[in-house]
Amino acid sequence: MKRALLDQAVARMLARIDSTLSRPGEGFPHYADPATGQWTRSSAGDWTGGFWCGLLWLAALRTGEARYRDQARAWALRLRPRAASKSVFKGFLFWYGAELGSELFADPVARELSAEGARGLMQMYSRTAQLIPLGTEAEEASDVGLNEANIDALPGTAALLLSHGTTLGCDEMARRHVRRHIALCVRDDGSVCQSATFDPADGRLVRRYTHKGIRDDSTWARAQAWGMLGLAQTLAWRETEFRDAAARVADWWLDHVPADHVAFWDFDDPAIPDTNRDTSATAIAAAALLKLARLVPERAERYRAAAEAAVEQLVSRYLTPVSADDRREPGILTGGCFNKRLGVATNHELIWGDYFLFESLLALDGCFVPERV
Image 1 (cartoon, rainbow, N blue to C red):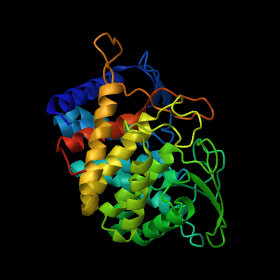
Image 2 (cartoon, rainbow, N blue to C red):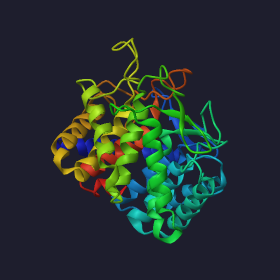
Image 3 (tube, one colour):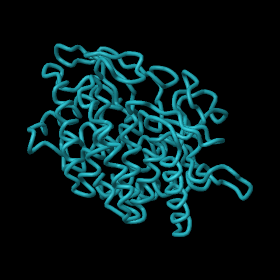
């Protein structure tokens, strides 16, 4: 990726972070109208609040400015009550919201918060099913409970547990959580199903389905991307038993993503190409591929090239401004598809899309080794 384009993209995204900090409004940024830049916010962070903190931690790393670090810590502290929530998605909250600060800055407050999140996950663990179920309070899931699993529960969650494995003794719990999600959600061909019902007595698969894809047997783009990311994070903690699964899931993405590298919201939508893209899924996949390029050496060239191509497309075509006469606020990643089935934010800026594009840009810029986060 050309240096000038990368530097311009980073500058735009920093400007958007500053704009978000300056805008009045209660709660964590969730998704925004690209035309106005106005955020819809979540008071308690929903499942996405950690990504806003993560953007601030990364901005602190990139700029060296203490104000970003102070803001990241302050926002992370607002997540503290969520450690007790009955949702496996708190793995997202406390990995990106807190453990990032620990990994990048050895921040003691962030590490303490991260440990609270990890302990909260441990309390949800099912010894019979050998995983952490979706939980009774999982956000935006139409099927919740103690016998439901979701591929979204892999990234962040497994990494958080592995990062505290020595001190809290939860490393084997993390491994079992990953194993069960591979069995429940990864199909034989390497495609990923978003959700699964399992027998709580033994973890046996009962059915596969989707909350947000077009149908139960389709491949929702974000499910595939979450699977890639979760497995890449697990490999980063030297859990090499998951290497083959990680490569299968990543290779499926590369074999099916459009030629322009930007995924449609669901790989099986019959309306393709006249349907929504999902830039957030594409950004997640790019971040995962940059990690896997370092963790699966025999595929390094393919994975890194694909990640760079995807990031370049996102920056050139979707990150405002996208043309000389584009008067929208700079640094908005457009084209995110939150929930097509419900018609929610189907062509919007999504806070997690912003985070993963920014992470990918900084990884390409050499600010940190990709697998560190």
